[in-house]
Image (tube, rainbow over all chains, first blue to last red; front, side, top):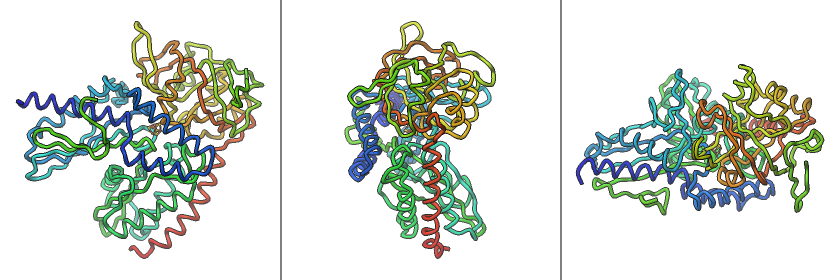
Length: 301
Length: 208
Ligand code: SF4
């Protein structure tokens, strides 16, 4: 394959992967939703869970996006410095989004500010978002895909606290946001929390936290303890599916961290709704790929 | 018109004031008939810019929704996916919108505020929640796209005029007495949050 053919191939795979993630939820989310359904005693909440599973079934059967808000497309790229398509990757991802928008179809959601025009194909200035991480010496490329909905993960929150406010201040910040905005963000939610040094580092980490599997834990024991405390505390609120009340409130709480400054303790929070459209696909240098989020995905979807 | 079909409460457009005033917060209903979609920009056009909607929606349903639609003006449209968007964004304009249009049933997600509750009380209307994220189930209940206006706003913001059949479940969140389930729930969540935050705070205090 020459470079042009390779670019076309990877564009096609990424377009169909993005489309696939709009149609089918990742395996970890489906299994968490089924355990929440099994543990739900409230009949009204239970009927909403049943509807979710019926919707998943119909979406897969008819190959349609499971939620109409297919969001803005975001990519977190971990690209090997020796990956053959490194130089073409950003453009190729834009083309893949355009293709997925037309073929899946995805809802066109990119509105250029000031012009106030919907571009119609989900691309535009800064769209799709591509967050780069270069892996020295590797010849493969791993891509997290995320469809960020306008009612859940795009409206995030961050604040820079004074260290004197402590981790309790961070806990309160997260829980206040959940109580205020959570019921409208299509719970059960996955809550991403970032603890870092500035508004933008904490906010970014809260998004990266959402890209971790449901049920995974931070390697730092205290960070993992805080994830669990928040999860239990938020579940005790009983927000339930759609915010109408129920046994649980969340799919989980994932926390990511970076250093703080002696003078700052920054906290960021991002929600994902139950329609948590996260994908992860890994290419080798011959463009053979594997995904650990969506068993059943092949590029011919 | 309100019917009871196999234990299901089904309302058909145009809704009468009596149909709507009989509903209580927490009731689960299904609807048949005409629904118009409208989000932020459509409310701005009607309320702030004083434009008239292309169709008369008095006694009908408004859905806070931005669908995915296939097709074009020439070949006709079909519904791929449709579901509610966050209703609270329309809170500021909803009272005036309801006053101006006479719409009787609003479908969205999450709750709405005091002004909308007031409008429901005054005009005899309700706000209902459709479980969001279930956009294919909802598309299957859409029988026909009768027309579209204001497509210049983009597909999600345009005003789609659709006919639905057996559309639901819709959970009444604000009834015509002004009872607002979400407002009640949010108070409850906030109360438990305070208790829980206190407990967690005690456990993480030693982290710094
Ligand atoms: S919050 Fe999620 S499930 Fe709810 S409407 Fe938005 S994208 Fe869909």
